[in-house]
Length: 289
Image (cartoon, rainbow, N blue to C red):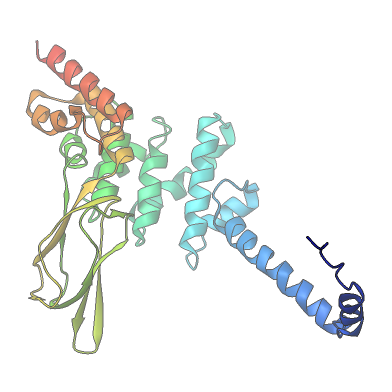
């Protein structure tokens, strides 16, 4: 057997030496582009991350920033965290917190309802939360009801029970179904369930809650009228868990049929949710005695 010939090493070296080198200008452009690719996601995260600490001045400015509702949410989250730390200075922003209970953006009202439950001594919080039980958003109503439980107020019990039930999604306008999500798809609050076409207008049908698509009442190509049922969405695990915790304290025997489905051992129900459902069932029965 003949030995393998030694490869000629001169050719690659010569080829490399003849390759045109990148100009200084192009190298700078390359590094600048790479830097921006890293920087832009960081800036987006930095501007949307609610954990970034705000100074007192920034917090006041953010609460008034109607052009950027996420700034208002950021400020509210920071207020909630200061409440948790028992910061005595946080009360200076309580009037603004009460004002935001009627803010036109749903996400802001939703966060606000949660924040007002962090301090049961807050002036005006209780009354504002009671009014929020009639909010147009099921999530705002639910968060207001959950916060009221901290006040020892069970007025929002029907709204809490509703958090355990599938949400019905209706078409706000009529049109032809052009596309839809598949049954079983996980979906966030505000996520698109279906798209309708009405002439040149595309109508997006969005989920009012986070969860999983349970049923679809329409098919692609079908024409639906305004107000027609499009789908139902099962609530997500976090929402169910919070509702079960509240019903542990204020639930009544009439609520048991809504609680019991979450006691089943199925892949869709996490262990901590199933355990909470069992504890809630037990607590309701003991109160009924």
